[in-house]
Image (cartoon, rainbow over all chains, first blue to last red; front, top):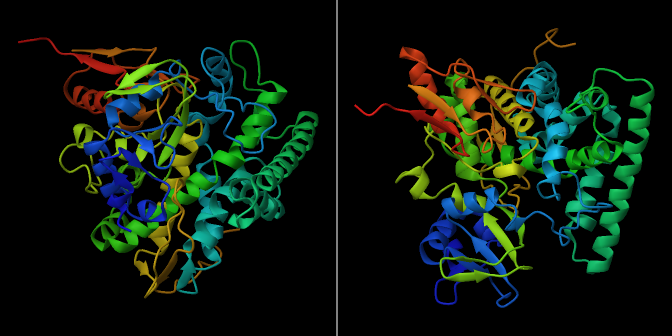
Length: 412
Length: 66
């Protein structure tokens, strides 16, 4: 099936959750914006699941949480309670963000750069001599998790445990078809394990603080208070659930794009100073988190479609990010130094991704180190890439390159 | 030429101080602080880049009509 078949202009129905759409979403987005800017989720006509696709509409929805709420019960990711701050609406939301934001501000995360660079180097050491790699399994999956362990001062030996919990929540039972009850039970068991783990870790850090990110929860003060115990637990939970797959999928999409576009790859390798701009354009053009969900709280009419309280809104970030009304006639093109580039890959409005500054740091350093050591690479011959819908991971991502020596004595 | 910030619209994307660090800075929350409210010359060029980078359109330049 062609990705454009996933939009039916007659019935105004669409389905963004198809692998063919995830593999090549831009034609799908173009058709959606042009023919039905407020489409219905295919097969759910009458149930009120609306797909919103134009830049101005998505941006407006993100900035109006009183209409498009984040208080979504249906979002079951194994949590005990509505997650702070992800599932809390303003005005309570801003009280939480004021105390949590400083721990992940651009200024705070900038100090983590040497540690992130060391982790990227160590992950790459395991495959550079080989000349072939499954970049997904060996680079983009372990990287964000290893960075998280390093900046929180947790032992590297916990890596596999974290990856298992995350996978059990996002794809219970490894993606095998399961009864909804069993999926939910598995999610909650993994969620429970994550809470228990962090209960212990936070108790340890309270007793003997270090200079890691978790210890700083206890000392970063805003409006005369530090984070509460629940806030600390929930932010730790979100690190695992929102901070790992998102970075993995962005790196998957980035390496796959550059592997298939040698002119852009050569520019990145030859001009590392261009990488921050390239990261922004990859986030825009690839938009690895294709959409986010909101719950309609107030009646609103958009392009002749009535949205009622209780309806679900699917905000197509990827479609907003390729809308020519904002990005011009070359919106579908990759323009490494695009200016302006007001993409919404991290959302926008009060729920702007809490981890965006850490994500940008990881993405930039990963692309810098990768292209410094492996300037020339391509897809393995015959490789056919499978993109997962929703969050565009590529499993596997086989790349080939000239084998590189591991520098000796440079790293302790 | 005055740089205008709508502080209520700023949510801390941090694009302004990433692309124009001499004109824009950040508070502890990562929200925009205008460092150079009345920029000239090269700083004015930076200010323009920073203003148009904001995804929330929280920044503007008060361009005198001539």
